[in-house]
Length: 421
Image (cartoon, rainbow, N blue to C red; front, side):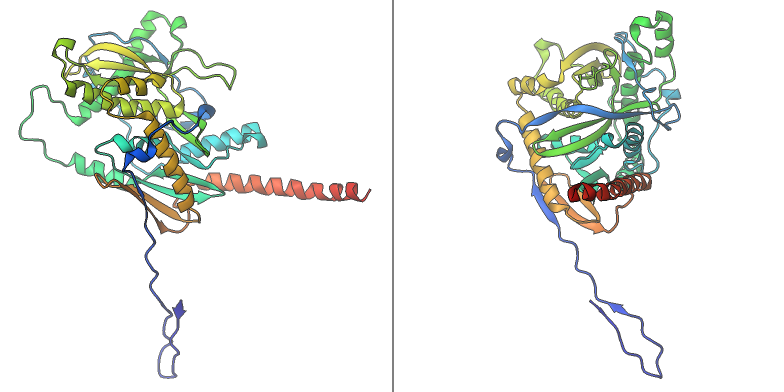
């Protein structure tokens, strides 16, 4: 409560003194024990694409599918280090929030009319849900996010300032005193993934693309500026979600029926396994732990297949293997049993339900999981929306809601007249 001091004639008026506000309450969701989430998984609605957009060669938003690519088998034996010195690497320097995702929803609603309103309990990037889903089995799991409630929907984004600070710290770390001869830099290993994509993706359907055009594209400058993003509607139990995320490529052209599954493919690289005679348990364990993130990313957007390029320690492409996304949890269960897909789904479902009960008023909330803490902490940190929901999106939705209300009011006299008669 604010209190004021009464001024006398010999004093200047005193400024109002505001009593300090109590700190925001911290809400906690424990990750352990995992047996709470065992058993059959919560019901999942198959992801269905509701919108899409692309980023062009300058990483500018484009409201079309120009960023779509098609898969071709890359040449085995290729050196994934080739082209590193000319790599066009895009890394967000400013907080992009959910702007591109929300812009795509606005574009879709403007194009398709009132029926295109994408209403959900949660709207976020696929990356945020991947971190939540994999937290129960990720030994190094930590994340920072922000959330805000607007018009009954919780919007979640990455804590960009903290992530940018982490990247700066990593970049300024001195190199280790000893390097294994085959040990590569973090930047080089990041490049390998993009080089693999350049070798395995072309912008036109393979059947109608001349071989010389394919070879020309495979020799082009590696860049991650251009992308294509799919936005899907899905649900975990009773909680509906709209998720946006980058998709690598298509195995076949998109179907004309919007209800039909899209044959997306996710491309990944991994270090080759030793020959079967020399494989040890830790080799399989390392790879199957990596499959957790591969599975979660593809599962969330409804990507049916994952193609892994196995490379040597020095970055030479040795082989390819295709995995069906829905089969990965069973494969791991029969192998090392180092993670359980049902537990991941049930954990995410329970967490989303708890978040809905926690984020119940306006403001910006932090969502934090600290490394090895085993507890997700949520607390309100400030008012407003923190730019999580863009001004363009707010203006469009407010205008749209106002139009609907005006139309309803315009119809009222007619209804009254009908009732009188």
